[in-house]
Image 1 (tube, each protein chain N blue to C red):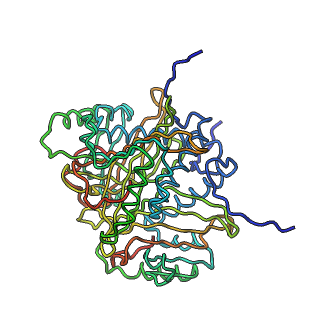
Image 2 (cartoon, one colour):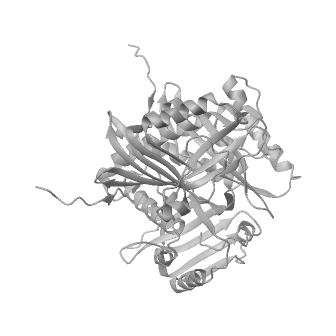
Length: 170
Length: 170
Length: 170
């Protein structure tokens, strides 16, 4: 018997969904800790084997263009990206730290859809911190290999151009 | 029989209040999503018919002055404001994104009082993002028309002056 | 009978831990409100009598050096610090506001360990707000005098140098 699948947001009124919200929150805590700690080698493992990772300017995203700053379509491509980053140490020393905004969680037919704002702050060693990315993440999580994993992560940032200096993952 | 009404903060120890906290959180998720997505026409509907919306510098607020950057006292005035914003497109293209801090929720005699910090980041199309407002929101929510609505929203920002460029709602 | 003590993270799947998470969240809400409101005289009381408060650059922290920007080892030393701040009003008027990131809470043998990112924004009266500290807090909370208190707070910031202007507590 097939039933129409209706997306429903996992809101506070939906008591049974508290566990799901908490699991998703724990997932992002681990995700952002790994990136903030520069454990880049752990990054691809947060994604499914086949996946979409995209960093795209807001204007292109809203017009339906797919021209973007970075795109990967598999865990292997993410791993290649990490290898490239670890091999090339030509950049001035810097740190990134990520400040995600409140999480919205929606149970959908094809997984768990989430939305949250993201502020990424860059600190060059001898300078004051500066906002390097301000945007919103539209993600889709699925159960895979015994845990939640990103099947899709689209980071839409509020600018036509992104700093050349944004060389690490969001 | 009349009982003295004592405000009590809706803290974590207060198990029965988890549902209320979650409803308030969902309210602000929707509120900030609407503004970040520039669905300005939805904004007045987050308020009650009679309401107070005020954006005021910290110094004036703490001294008890009411001289402020913007004030509206009804949903109609908020609608007028939106109409004005939608008609005048003379500004350089820009995006705003709001990062609310942790929510404090207090059940009071006259509704639900909330407090949270607010960071508002502005991105001009071809520039790096910059913090345009840093402040704290003192709000009062009430049940109205089958949902929570803002009866009062006072945004106190940490500066004597506010950027001329802050033309969209906080 | 002695049992090995195993640290376990207080994640969303661990239902019984929801109360603890909520208490810790309430603790930080009160902590940051006190600092944002410049109620400096309340600050030492968030710590235990014997305690460690340290503000340290990331590079020193990661290399195991203890050379730091500020350190106090007792509530009395924190009180001295506050007295010094309240007596010297030689600084240009400014406000600080703190934006903590998501909280990670771990029950450990020696108390409750927490980790969260911290963004501190400074506003000089007639200027735009600016990020003055971006870092991560590694704290340890214990039950003391009928409530949670900080036995340890290590604020690791992403820079070799910290702004001279950061004169108030993090």
